[in-house]
Length: 115
Length: 129
Length: 247
Image 1 (cartoon, rainbow over the protein chains, first blue to last red):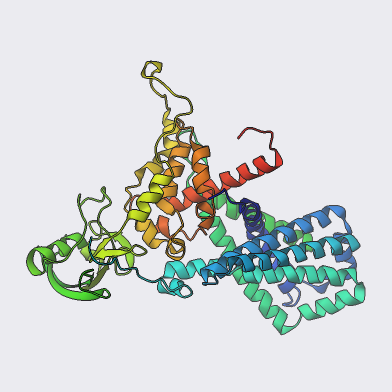
Image 2 (image 1 turned 90 degrees about the vertical axis):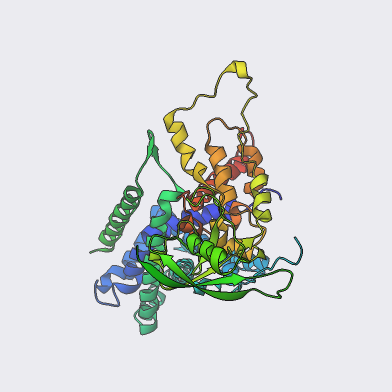
């Protein structure tokens, strides 16, 4: 009955939950709804504008933070949800979920450095 | 005690259907799926952005498709469910003791909603409203 | 005083003769101010003396009469018939083995409660001549809410994680661990952490919150567990990133 190592992922889950609670709705609106629904003009997502924005080191870090914590929040919650739905192989689900989050993390780092 | 104690089985997959409280819990938990997928979409967008203007235009075109709009609408709803359920539980997870009393839950939740509005307005302003 | 005929279904189980529990129906003439416990008592006194159930104070302070009333964990002495329709189903508390009728085996809870060391473990040994522990009203208020637990185990019946994972230490036991951790007279948090900062302790909890919903004393065990999760996470980072710092 040793002390658990769950605090690692739970800390990320909690931070991610807070960040997504504040930011995800408006981000979904701006990136995925505003322009297609005609609420905002297409210049909002113009290549030069977005490329300059993401090219800025400060915003690069901010974006990475949002993506990183969102990934680990979703991964941990997904693991718990699978358990709630009766999937007993928690070890497998955990490895799968956290691997996906790790993959997303590495991809984000790689891509942000390229831009 | 003679005779066997009887152990009632709990249905491992469908237990949550039996009560509205558990259904609401599951609705909250599954918000992680659309939020996870949306985060993947963001990463995909970064990839297209890194590949140049043409690739980015392709990505924007895909965002204009009915499937993408539908997904983002659904994701938006689930994101709101997550926001509301997260804010609602903060008073019990983090109690703020001021002197002898605790800050009322409504105040703590209210501060979160206020912050949410401010943050959302900032993002909208940056986007170019 | 008006009367209402209420059909009360009770899940019966006789360990010596039954293979499985069965619902049995009784028609009970109920007074309007009665609680569910009064209806069950009437059944035992006038209709069927074989019905077994626990009760004691009849005023929601002893925690003995927990049962499932129409599928919801409740104290039968606190469930007013006026809040229910003409048909009520009463079953023993969920997630516990049924001993007989409405009596469940609570040994698992008792063992877990004992495991969390629910008593003051002083920081230093104090003799009587050293005087009393002094505690300000603010210090008392910090943990007071968690002292209100009456060990009725409605929270265990409501908690799906306890139902799915029998090793889970559970809401009430952990709310009580938290009560002592928050008490300024106590110095035993490290010992309790060995028990609750484990996979079957706070980390099995997924914050469903059903426990706090059904608690008749507004203890909010769910909140207690989340607070312990946060404290345990801070501890973990301190231990692993700053091993030189004292806990």
